Length: 172
Image 1 (cartoon, rainbow, N blue to C red):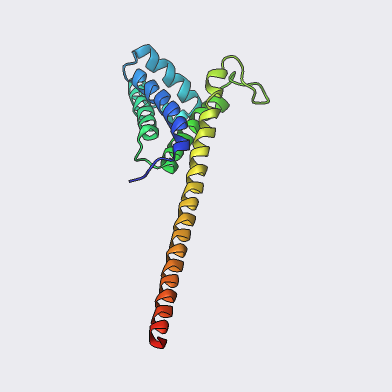
Image 2 (cartoon, rainbow, N blue to C red):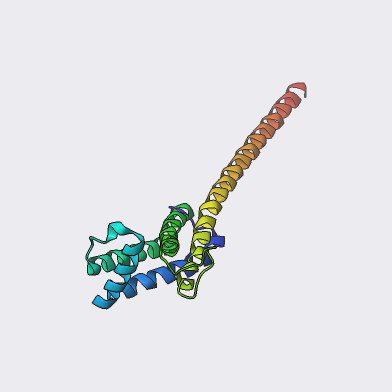
């Protein structure tokens, strides 16, 4: 079982709850919502054009709920949660970059692009979870090495004390 680094809890709770809620809302989306989101996504990702809009909306909903649940689950490592969030937000930013009118020529968001451009924050949080998990693992390994070294030192000290006591009793 993996323990969650307490420094990750606010990031994972806020982002996970937001994404999970978004997925839950899409689950009950109507035909108009499905068509709109499908048209938007298939414009940026042409391979989605062959998928019918209601199926696309259900798949998107399931994906969002899975990412949100992954972030919220305390038994999921920060590295796995960060990878899920990074992949999800990269896909969202792909929409932003590939859709005309979302940004000016210098990648600054237009008014239309601002709601998706904000997903850059999720990419940053995902990267922080990935990087923070690696650092925490390195810290745990270092702590384990220190503990082993201290244990070896204590055993050596006990052996020296025992040998000194034996020598003293032989002389004595």
